[in-house]
Image (cartoon, rainbow, N blue to C red; front, side, top):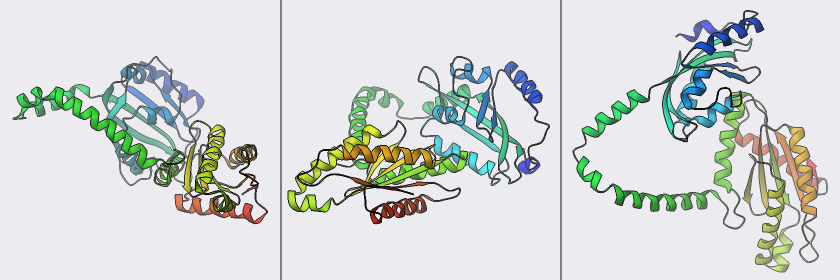
Amino acid sequence: MDDNSDSKPLSNDFSDLNIDMLHAVMELVSDGIWDWNANTGFVYRNPGWYEMLGYPRHSMENSVFTWERVIHADDYPQVMTLFDDYIHRRASFYRAEYRCRKADGTYLWIEDRGYVIARNDDGSVARMVGAHRDIQVRKSSIEQLERRNQSLEALVAERTRELSRVNQQLQLQLDENRFLAEHDALTRVANRYCLEKVLLEECERAERFRLPLALVAMDIDDFKPINDQHGHAVGDQALVRVVESLLACVRQGDLLARWGGDEFILVLPKSSLMVARALAETVRQAIREVPAVGEFALTLSLGVVERRPGESPTALMVRADQALYRSKAAGKDKVSE
């Protein structure tokens, strides 16, 4: 359906009564129907949506994060591209086929269609409805036809067990290589590559769903003299102790990364500047409890920023770094915005 007709702002047509009536009708539909109020973040899903995936009715969080969590990781980027193209009017319709995780851990192929029924005055989405349809049978039929056309099917069957063993070994090696590629060898926290990847994802998510996102840049004060006077081995031990204290303060869902040397970055999804500053103060106090290295007491200087609408990861990092240096200039062992 053409999106040109959905440009009008949200009107009184969507009263609480009409919404209740709509949801009542949706309760009777067997397909998986969803209703997203983008202004409040509330997502209603009818019983058919839950039954299709094997979950108890209305047992999951009524937010977009429930949708994100059930999408297969391999399908997620393509789905979000199609979704973004539609809600930003780069495409005239939204339709996607992807796998959703069921309650038993298996995946179900579904077709997802959605339509924006109202927009705000600034053109952003105010209300969107859509439906999930089970297409597992069709997908399975296609897969069966493809398998029949494989000329080496008999040979593949004979080698399945051997290939399974090899694949398991490769998967273990792949997991290990991925961990090494995304984590700092000394401190075992995320490295620069992982930070850049996660920060880009979080900025896109924050922009898409209009969520807050905060960043904390941290640098150990006067760390170079520790290496100069006590050696790098002692300096490395001090870094590990600092990271242990930082991890004790980090919340689930936050990302701690080593930016380089004695500088660290903390990514705080769904967090405002006020929340980030409070956490930064907690971190600063925690580091003061780390045992001194000889005559050198360990302290942190921190810079705290909240992402602005439309701001890129690079620009956000630059502002965090500038806030950090304001702490340095103000005498160190401080939190600055």
